[in-house]
Length: 240
Image (cartoon, rainbow, N blue to C red; front, side, top):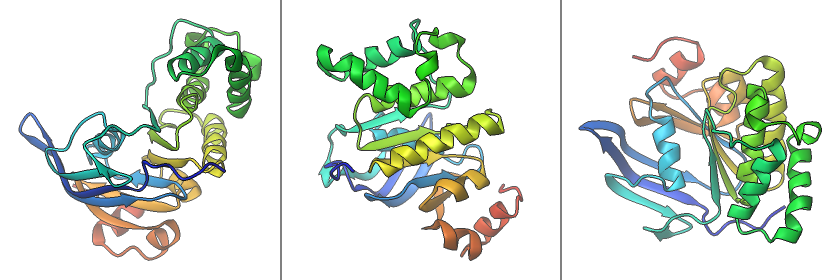
């Protein structure tokens, strides 16, 4: 288990974000503490990806306060993000990880062992020499996870990591996410899959139209939702 990151907790206080005159996040207040994965759910356009980008420090709030470990106006130092469609370098699977390790400042003598460890963790040892762009969608997602972990993050953001994957590939990737969380890395991920949210989350955050509708531990969210929107979403009804 790793020591708690000085980037945690991440705290949003009345945060809004607008782009092109459109309010994408509206008066969001949330806390992301050390602990089990937090899963963001909600319909398309709810603001999940924008929230992840804000948490990562890739964009700044239009209004409100965002702090990492009590610090404001700084870029988080021990965070990594994997997007829904990660780009693969024109290298082998191992080459992608070695490049990420070099970028993260890992000394050359340590890279081979660390690369082997990451390939093992994501189940790609047998594909280490294969061109990354020739891997399947699920294999590319696992490789993207390994590259993100090369940074030795304490917080890992995942944007719809199993979107468009078949059930077998989804299960493998979920197993990797569990292994990551078991190492003490805080996972914050978005998903459309309520089954996946049930399987992986410690806490659920439901977003709709850029606003936080409900937050709750995963068990109570699904067994006794407090809001009408949450009840509808769990029942498979459309939120409009």
